[in-house]
Image: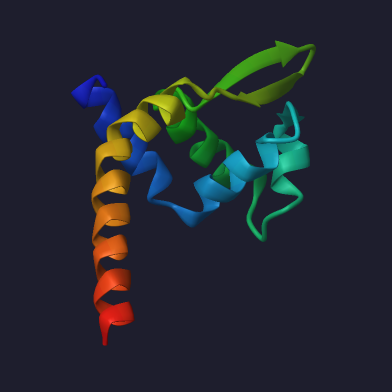
Length: 105
């Protein structure tokens, strides 16, 4: 995983609004207006969040006439999942050890 991209991805995912935007994009491309309708904020604020996601390469933007359509880009999330995998294994082993201790009690 590219260390610089890693920092951008973690920073982008730190915001609950940006995580919610990614969830909305799971169903397919959406316009800024469609995305903004799900939040209690003005469209320019949603656009700023989308810019952070775009800079982290988590979304792509495509212009269709006067509208901008945003799509989820899974690449950085796959890289993040690969990076997290050893930690998942670590915690799975720890939890199995805890289960064994509790069963012995």
